Picture 1: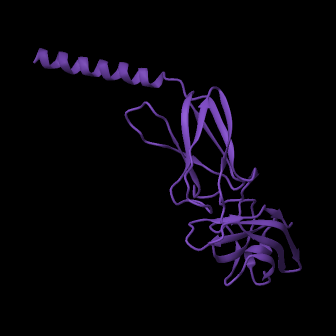
Picture 2: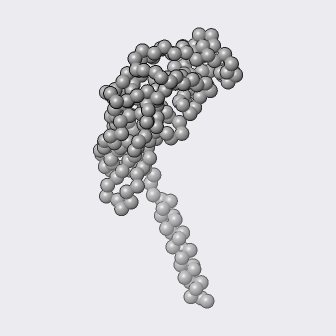
Picture 3: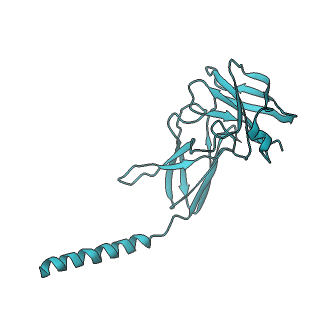
Length: 224
């Protein structure tokens, strides 16, 4: 019986020492930050629900699991890591761009800023979004970047916070059968009680490509 008590006591002490050792590891302090771009310009993306992700891999470890890096609605991202060499790639079949998954090698020492260049199916430019009474008006250009891409729908979105996308809104209107070029679209908000009660309103335009899991977005505009 004494032998079993000794073994049990030894296991408890070992677990305690091991746990204390794990607690004493320093947290990662090196900062990796950057943006997803096309021709050097940040892309407007969905920033809620962890919908758009990058993946970080580090060679030399037995477990080759990746680290998820979540992308914001302005195309920016940030992660705290340990120093080392990392490979940064886009998530497979995720995002409003061609699924090339090119690798960006990052040598992280304290801090590193990187760009992840992609080729979007479409871009949005020259947008003008305004509120006239209860009608939202949006004029903008949809630019076709990939010759084989087709528009699934164009969407107008309004929210009461500065987070606006196709999953976070209080007003939305989709337009099918749209073609690239100059568009002038409108949405009547007169019967929307959430819009009427909102102290602040923000709006955005989105374009979803056939076959893509995410839309590309314009900059966010504050309406009131």
